Length: 93
Image (cartoon, rainbow, N blue to C red; front, side, top):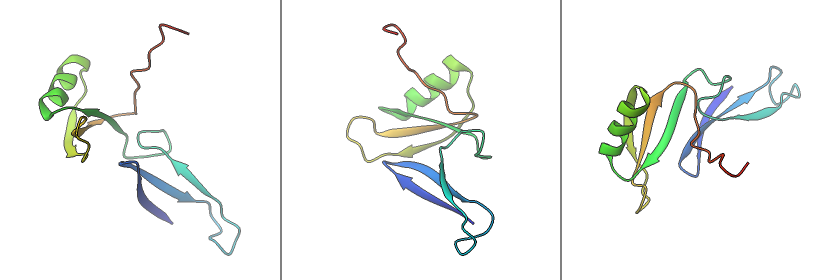
């Protein structure tokens, strides 16, 4: 069984292990763009759709779609093809 849910505006999928609920199957969260997720989407928020196109050009990612977030500052989610990436700041590691 697979289901898609949204937590904090991020789609996630629940995978149920074989055996079903009656057979003791366990549920696990699968983050978008991880190896366990065949959709392979890389999602980053931005202030407007033009910023999504700038990220596409700068990083060589293919933009799939732009979705509204409802957030007053980061107004859109830019959805790119491929595994999820991070802009983690490693200067202080």
